[in-house]
Image (tube, rainbow over all chains, first blue to last red; front, top):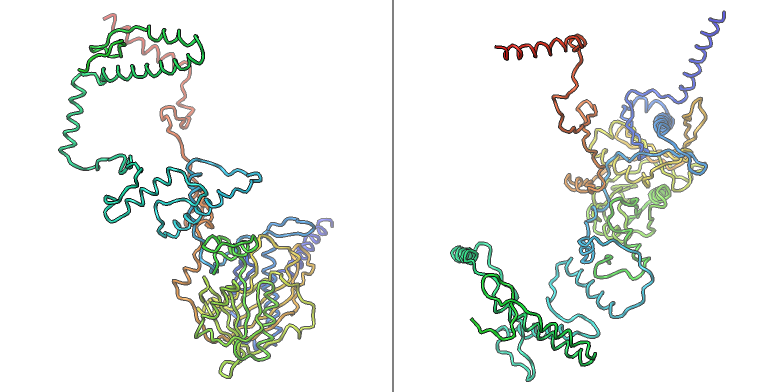
Amino acid sequence: MAACSVEELLAKAEQEEAEKLKTISVQKELDLDFDVGNLLACDKNRIESRDFKEQKKEDFLRALARDNTQLLINEIWKLPTERVEEAIVAKLPEPATRLPREKPPPKPKPPTKWEQFAKLKGIQKKKKTNMVWDETRVAKNEFNRLKNIARAQKIKTPGVGLLPRTKQSKDELSRAVSVAKTSTASAGRFQDRLPKEKPPKNAGKRRKFEPLIGDFSSEKQKQLELLKVMDSKRPKLDITKAVNKQMREEDREEAASKRKGRKGGAAGRPKGKGGKGKGGRAGGGKAGGGGKRRGKPGKR
Amino acid sequence: MAHSDGITKPKTRRSKRFLETREPKLLENVKNAMIMKGGNTSQTVTQALKDIYSLKKPNAVLYKKKNITRPFEDSTSLEFFSKKSDCSLFLFGSHNKKRPNNLIFGRLFDFHVLDMIELGVEKFVSLSEFKISKCPEGTKPMLVFAGEAFEMDNELKRLKSLLIDFFRGPTVPAVRLAGLEHVLHFTAVDGKIYLRSYRCLLKKSGCRIPRIELEEIGPSFDLVLRRTHLASDDLYKLAHKQPKALKPKKKKNISHDAFGTKFGRVHMQKQDLSKLQTRKMRGLKKRKGEVVAEEEQRSEPKVAKTES
């Protein structure tokens, strides 16, 4: 008897389950396509025109809509949920349908000069405290901003000029003058100079580099000369020059210490004497090293 | 147009924010729609436009004045409007003898017309005629497309994509389950498209998933497809191009088979093969007695040599 009732109970339970699911289950020929990220469902099943015309249109459409919505809700209820402030919320996945953008994707902006420098140096951004208004900097900032814009838009800007500052330095002014002078048709050769103006010191290039693949014969000559010098076993150090330099330095030190000595008193002198009294081996020969002599050696 | 960081700089933070919302971004804003009237409109058309505006609020602008333009012939004024109001979707309603109760749905890419589809309204029941409480403004609607025509016909496929774009609303990471109220159902049958809008009632069923009951609330349209102006394939492709940053990052050393099996790759260091642990066979195991015997054998020949 007990066994029967158990079976009956099981059967009953199954029936109940089926009934429960009946309320939410929908029979369809083809499964729907779901895009839950967009709350979208697409039903590809054929709609028989006969069925459509038989019933009243609205009822047919409503029944169809109910079935499809039920299936969509079933899908949505499968998603993971969480509780957010008294409401149960389902987490939606990313929308699967590919839809066109409204604007083209953004172009990466070129880094400004500072950003490049910071990247190079590895400088990180720091939070600034309240800064004081500085007028001279404002003009400089404006100038740099315009330069950045010009560079980004590839507009040509004059290479040298005067920065819009309140006071220009002597260097900048002289450089601006020299640039202005050389920017004539004959490269400044026939430009008159002011009465007290000095000729420019280091006009032109400061260093000259040979081209990579230049004159092979000259390169060969240079290399052979270099090898010869290395081979000759002559000391690289020019003794006379070294000695002269050392003596000049000594004299300078003496003069400085004398001045100090006059101001400071007798304390300076012993030092000077000590300096003078230092003996040294006479230079000459292969040993190198500067020798110190009181008398000036003749030039060789 | 005044661009930020260009020659004209925004002077206030508010204007800067305004320009920033309008510039192209990785993750785009919700598409706004502009709803406008043509040279001549009928009562049906104006009411239809108002109803669609209320469906699309707040991501839509409804223009009151009539604009004497023909989108299919000249789209420059549409593009100008879209630039000014930053709208990439539009709905243009008009009425004339040749095309009564005409609605043109369209979208733009980079302020140029991408797609335009003209639909004729054959039957229209307005929102006001349904005496029932409506869904609150701004609810994200569920969209259902029924009918195989939406997959088979090329033009209807585009129309489906356009309608999804138009009605879907903002993309959200999560949705409140109780707030799934609004359903828009599009059916394509017999060459016509039926749009019905329902309110969802979640009824108790035996299990966790509720049973759905629908009440019709919204505007109902019976539409017929008229002219279309679809974008060329390359422009369409260009509009779909996503920036690389949005692509999901590929996990290294994981690959998938044609059958869907997941394969992983493990990188090993160099192994000493002589010390490798191979299969153990108990029978071949060296026992103590044997070891001694071997050693003796080895030692014996040596002894023999020395003797001789």
